[in-house]
Length: 395
Image 1 (cartoon, rainbow, N blue to C red):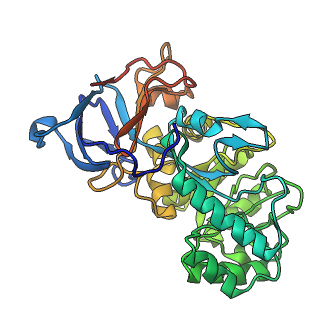
Image 2: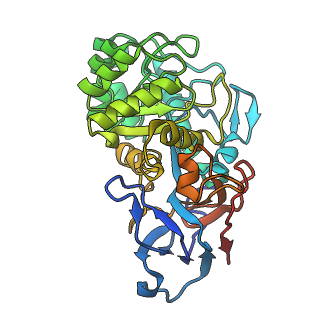
Image 3: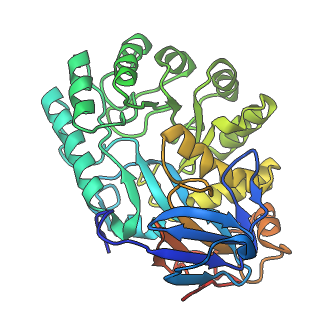
């Protein structure tokens, strides 16, 4: 059920018998803890159960040895309104992503809205409306940061100030509108940054009508905060250009499911060689022409770990803590004071891996046994992942 964030409260919860606790933090990806205490939707404390204050517990989750990860964050989606996408004329797509472990989504622009206004007054109105709608309406409880205007020519500084004052914090993909030149984009990125609005730039070949080819020179000159789908959405830049972007730019490196897998692996390898894996974040770039991918982030984690030779506990950080830091979110990491957004995971039944991490390293998807958002159980066993070998018990 969709609901506003403040309508229900979690109370005090004990999550115990955790077999593996993934932190979302690259510096310490696996925590030496088997229990978490949640208070009113936030992480109160974590550690060994015997060392925690478990008085006044309202409910308990017995993990029975299952793993717990921070809720996964999709850094690149294109919502419209409600839980419907006109791109594929599909209902309940966000709820399906929840069943893939997604607890938070970041809009890269509401570009699929039929009749999307491109005049300055209209695009500002759409951004403010989308921001308000998804702030009030959370399909399945998923947090959707929306209201990301696609910038157009003739916008001025006052337009960005007005949107920021109204609550807009994101720009849609630069390059999907009429602004495609690096110099022009750089000026608008600077205005956006001045007023606390984060920017993402389209990278690679065109995707929707009106978009264009954005190469490394435009990306470098524009200096947006996030290099959107550096592996193409859908068509990637040459690998040499991707290397240049990783080496010559300090901005976030976004890898997406609906892009070129070889290019994604190459970008990640380059970031690793630069010792800058903290810049890597994951998205799906969906809904798109290739469809809706509820397990897109899990598939990216398995692909990057198995083919990219990166430990899965590190790759989980790309989809959690890295994104939370770059996107200024309160979830994404297991630490006191952060949002109690969790995914309960285990090795999928009949996987050849000896445990959860080994199964992912071998390319298998994990099974999801439950998802919490703000300490509220949103689902039990996922309807989309392979069956989990171990299921938590929500008491």
